[in-house]
Length: 87
Image 1 (cartoon, rainbow, N blue to C red):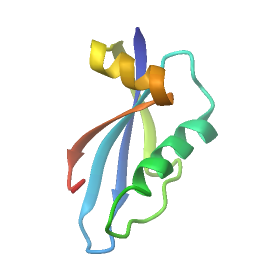
Image 2 (cartoon, rainbow, N blue to C red):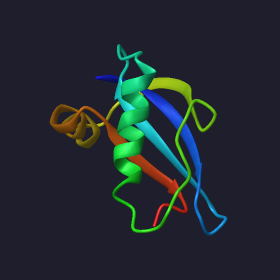
Image 3 (cartoon, helix red, strand yellow):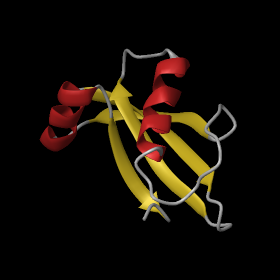
């Protein structure tokens, strides 16, 4: 499966910036849905975060997905890769 990678930077209330990628099927182009996936992920955090808009989340590239990502996308429609300040 090929996936689109959306590079995302969201400020936290403590001043740090979260960096994570939202991975979706490469055919998905509806940014409203992609941003909703990011917001759903942010709602799982115990600390406060800023908003997620097109300013914080941008298409980066397309790549092949490993099996664990394919499984996650099959289950919930997206996969998150945490990069920095996500916990």
